[in-house]
Amino acid sequence: MFNRLLKRLAAQCVIYHLWKQRNNVLHNQITQSPSAIYRLIDREMRNTITARRNRKQFQDLMAKWMH
Image 1: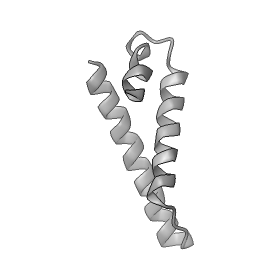
Image 2: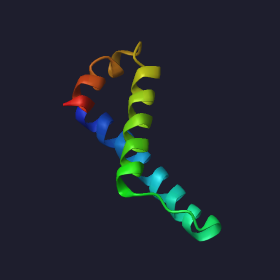
Image 3: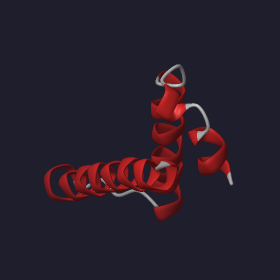
């Protein structure tokens, strides 16, 4: 169950940040390095998990993400 939830969260986060990067390149001519995008994705995943840490299904998710 944890793996499925983590995969879904990560997929949503990656799609969002790639789409945001695409729009920045097309509309603002601003690019970011892959490592900067990775840091944004990692930070958003940590924030999402931390914000929901009191829910039963999110209790052990941070350990899985960090592993």
